[in-house]
Length: 225
Image (cartoon, rainbow, N blue to C red; front, side, top):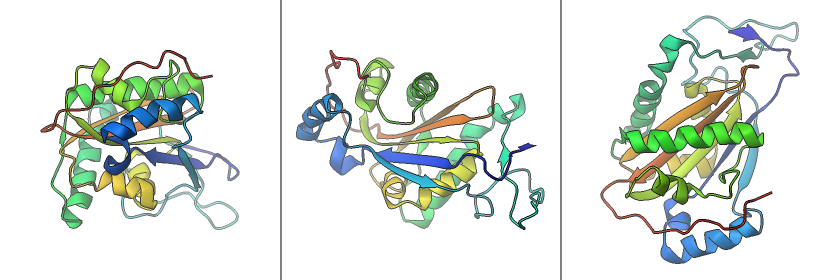
């Protein structure tokens, strides 16, 4: 992984759409209103890189130390070999955390993976990490577009230069994102990313309950600006 200057970018972690907020019928209708108002439901929190956390991954190599005595921030370049393992590393890491919290395991779902991949690329196009697509689509709409019929329980997103497990550790440090990850109603997961040429990664993790019928949503007729 290539070194970044100490003044390098911070990790941005965003989450919401917890089951108690984003899944009930009244909440789905209010989502359209929130979308038109600029998605007020979105909360932002800014975290420094999660190096040194228990879930950090970089092959186990010692971190480079800068002149200030702190680890030098690094760019995580996703190789072809990594690409075939990332989703399973995230699945194993998340399930370990869920088991410790008494929540059931989740399993990967191809349709949720597709929805997450679409949103990761779209966030890069928009150059902003949030839960709505460039065409105004909500997380619920993205699930319907890929044919997923289950119930959305939550979505977490991140704009970062860090690994998937460092990102998972950062999400676990925030109460809002932690609640999404450990939601006991979730049993299926989608996880994907888009990496830009400069190394920046847009991560998207979607959790859902495949045993329940999801809400029916209508497309937002007014694209967000």
